[in-house]
Length: 208
Image (cartoon, rainbow, N blue to C red; front, side, top):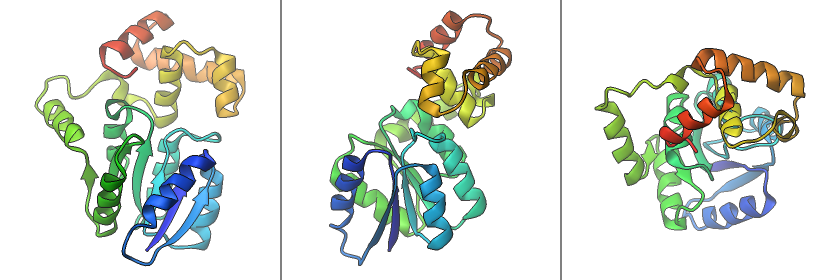
């Protein structure tokens, strides 16, 4: 089994590697610290699974997920993130992820998820399954933020958390002007005029 771990923290990659090595199958593991490094590996090798973090230094993990499913559709992607499931899970699954786990997941559950995904299945936790069932039966299933792109959604969350345009630009390695353009686009799509409205919306919908 060939597995690519994409996370910007070396200690996290090493921890995941040690867990994966507990699998009975013979395993080849490669590591990437950002989206561009992941693309480099994917161009060289055919991987069964990519363990993908959402927060990467060079681009949104959702953007990387979308690119992987577009260029290497047979590659299964298991998203492993620090973000709460409500925030990104459903969006990741819609973009083609085979599963979603938070980083506080027990090692045993990660192994079960990897095995199931490697066999072509899907994996979500019991808590996320309940959340999905609730949303599918709710009149509010289609929420306003569903119209945002992956990058817009990521920037919206950062704005709602009170980060400045400069801070967001530094984190994503893009200019303040570009962030400002994204903010204007987000506010127009969401029909908001102030950051306070955006923050309130995100809090009410448990996005932060």
